[in-house]
Image 1: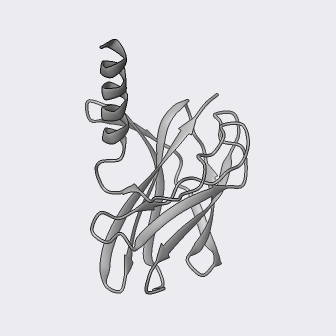
Image 2: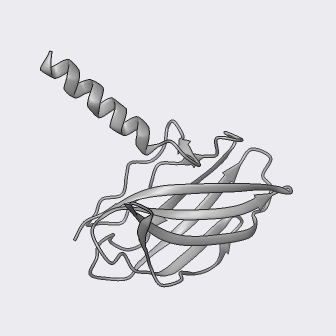
Length: 149
C-alpha cells in the first residue's frame, strides 16, 4: 500500500511539472546534467503539438558561472520564428520568483539562437521562458532546467 501511494504521489508531482504553457514532447533528449552541457527534452505547445522547442547547453549548468545555450524552435511547416523574447525564471511560489540579468541572444542559424549572459543565481528548478510568433500565431514555451550548485 505504501508503494502504491508513493508511485501515485510521484506520478502526480511529475504530471504537475508539465502543466501550464507547454508539455514534454515524446522522444526528447536526455535532461542536461548539472555539471556538463546537455540537451533538454523538447517541450511542445499545448495549442499546437507541431510547435516545440528545446535548449542545448554550451556550458555547465550551475550557480558559479555564466551559462550559454542554443535555443531551438521546431515546427512542422518550417516557419521562421518572429518577435522572440527569452528570459530565465525561478518560481519561488506565493507570487515571488527570481530572474537573471537580461539574457543576450543572436541568430545562430534558422530558428536557432545562441543565448548568453545567463546567470542562475541559486540552485533549484528554473525555466527558460520563451514567447514568439509563427505565421501570425503567438506561442509561449517554458523549458525546465534543474540547476545545482
